[in-house]
Length: 483
Image 1 (tube, rainbow, N blue to C red):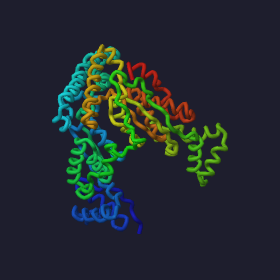
Image 2: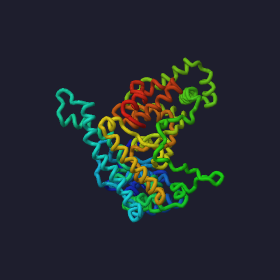
Image 3: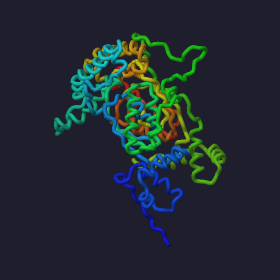
């Protein structure tokens, strides 16, 4: 008897996430159709299955079939950083590029609110928000002059076209305490790990969010996330108490001086790369299309002339359409960078979760960025006063609340992050984030990364499709008065 192909959805409107997960899991040992398996299941039977197989026997991959969609409202942007640190989830958040944020929409840690530092914190946050709102009209006038109405363009359409351009400059003043909304889609396995991280976090806000996420997730997946809990090991990782000491001296840097922040840090420093990238890519291509062991494919690639290797690279990478993804063989080539960028830019860079990213905590120690439009609007002094006030408040509050002080750090402040990425991800990152419609802060980073790779491995550069973009130096000169 011929079997007929059948492809269909298990409807999440009629089946719970845990039932769907069991229906998929049982196919490994049951000859029945998914429909028949699901029809025999109840939430209670599914819970028993997960208790036995997922929890008891550690078959955690089953939990990946249970997918939940969680809405977060009015959480701080500092908390968002922890929420979005899970690589295998999807997120969409309230944009600082397209929306003006509310003046009083910020988070105050309860412990800090009850302390002697409460007024200092409130005044510094208000100074940033006051400057943010005061900057809007003068910066908008500068942008209007730079991007005048086109012939036949209505005032409304013109206002919409330039809206993100003035918000792009004003957003540098928003502190990490600013409240935001985001949506998260994750499977139960990822969510359990995410909840554990949140419950083990040094910030009370994040721990409270973790408890709330666990509560709402258990409505749909009562078994698969119920064992997510605070873990001593994760606590040590999150609060930094595990860090090494050398000769009894802590690796913590000395407190920065308000009058002498680190100026003009390099946006990207290449730390490690594969000098045989070209040969390795060609060898991986030969390996894919032959029956050679990799050592022999590598030997063949090394023996080829430069012209022959260039032909292989061109054959593999040329002719891609706008929506065609570059070859996976590019993932065998990796790079590590130290990146110094403003926190607003990092919020977009962190969305590229295929990179391995190790960010340092938010501080005020690396100085801050000043957009050229802020200076052109005659707003530089006011802008700097607000940021300098937050620097002073940060250092005083950090004496009592070292983690909570980060809520004061505005988008303008620079931070360090270690990035390790493969060449395929670099193709995507540089092309997407370097595009002229992006924010100039992350465009500067993306194009500088492209320029380093172009100089390092020029054979790949034409296929990255960034050669028509302005250079990183041009972006700096056009958009930044200080980086």
